[in-house]
Length: 283
Image 1 (cartoon, rainbow, N blue to C red):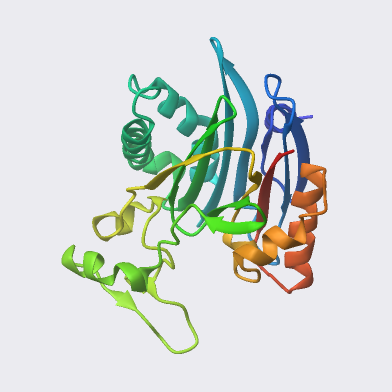
Image 2: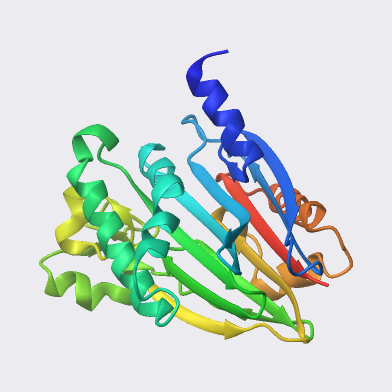
């Protein structure tokens, strides 16, 4: 077994996943009713799997954090791999994380993107979307995203999207103000400078003058009405809307089984993209 393969197996065991088909589960040590599971399936494209996940609980002093993320790469897997290894560390290193999580996350996203651009010779010309969710002590959720990976929460059976799909058409004015353009060719989706189908992402050095990495950030209280949190790449959301996803797993108690069910449902609906999904159950 090579060193890379050993490192990969260690990542999977720790709750980090990134291969053709991976699955895993875990639960909070402090809040026994909160469990999580993830499942990834490679799409039908010729390139290697470009989705990466983080799904774990971490004790920080007397606090406990749930750290969940989907990183959906494009033009290579090096940028999402870097995000998987570094983004949460950069967030938690921010001195104001506990007092002002939104500010800390914005700073960490900016810092991480700068580091990726500095390492472009090593990491390549690609980039990655991201959706991150940090659960603080079981009762406060902070979600951030760039791109079109999505976070959806269900309360009393009603789906609510916590992220924003950063689509080029929606941010055309901002892109044009920076000197870029949005193509909209027949039979294709809108693209930044005719290339990228999202208006915000990490990396993508060649497009960075016209491409934002500023995250959308929102906080959400977790209460007795909260049932489930779903994080997934656009391989799921291209074929399923938010309420359909929530309804599809409402009777599945096991979080890992729920995540696997969502990916299998996306495949059944002919999704051709890489599909990664995290489900957090509040039982």
